Image 1 (cartoon, rainbow, N blue to C red):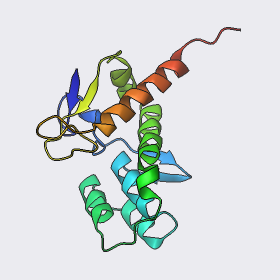
Image 2 (image 1 turned 60 degrees about the vertical axis):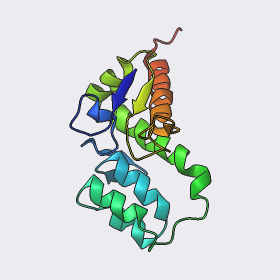
Image 3 (image 1 turned 90 degrees about the horizontal axis):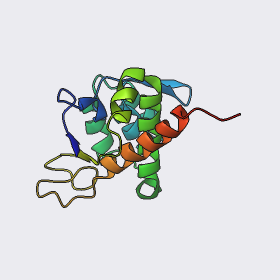
Image 4 (image 1 turned 90 degrees about the vertical axis):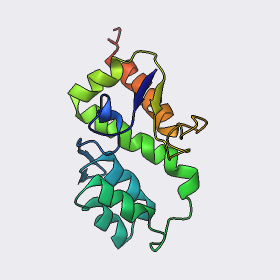
Length: 150
């Protein structure tokens, strides 16, 4: 099992707070956290405010603020949005793509003690949705790396 949590730790590149920017939807995103949080407000001025946040932590704080109008379909699309961000990040950066692919078929767990949706939570009963997204992205990238028969 591969565990990660903070961007500075081993496998920290799996964190949405890691310093791995990418282009998606014709714009540059400083981190997958920036993209994910901004998509809560797509089509509003708040989207750009979150995109331009100075740090992933600031983007997260803005995105989690319920003072801003959350898009009504968010609950049903948030995992797909996360997959878009994570896939773009690992397609952009060869070094971390190789790290992800090197995990083979091992389970990947976001060892967050506080997040029971994206992580496993303190008692490890959480959904681990980010770990599941990373394993799905790993599978997609592995398929893309397979030589195509002619």
